[in-house]
Amino acid sequence: MADTIVDDRAVFTGFDSLTYAPRGIEITLPNSSEKHYIPDVLEELKPKKKEQLPDFSCEYFTDEENCLVGLFWSDGESKRNYQVFGDIMSFDATYRSNRYSMVFVPFTGIDNHNNNVSFGAALLASETAETYKWLLRCFLKAFGKQPDVVVTDQDPAMKKAIEEVFSGSRHRLCMWHVMHKLSTKVGVMLCNTTDFKQRICDIVWTDSLNPSEFEVG
Image (tube, rainbow, N blue to C red; front, side):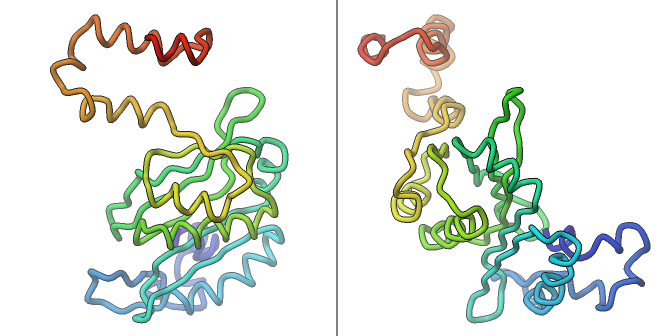
């Protein structure tokens, strides 16, 4: 994100057109011995982005050593997507960037053509409940309302943050993540049994069962 938010001029005209050194777009993280200047860069870029994209939102926070801990952003198109398709919102923190070991967190929804639409994204250096609370408050500030339904994986820190910040939303677990972790719950041998996999997929991936039929299996 630091590379993306820097300035579109760098893409088309090179870093010579920027008013600060390319090194300034580097970010400082707890495991890094180098100190860079991401807060200064972001403070310079935010008003420029506002001029180019009036609906652009960007929030960040750092720790006591001026290391970047969280960065959230969303643009006008994302906000328009949320106005129309924001009844159900999913956010996922399973994507870890290689360069800075930060977690990439996209906020997504589904449009009327069953396609994914973006509501915004974030980079996080830690996955604590406090960090997620900060992130959801940034989301709420940018969009002005909570989603009706929030879909996540089974992260307890996410659950705690949602309960506090999105108290009016219903929290549901992503079935893909539930099924992905199935082998750790029931064992690899059983998961590799064809009959078991067929039966559980027939139960899980259907809309025709009521809750009592699902429990009977």
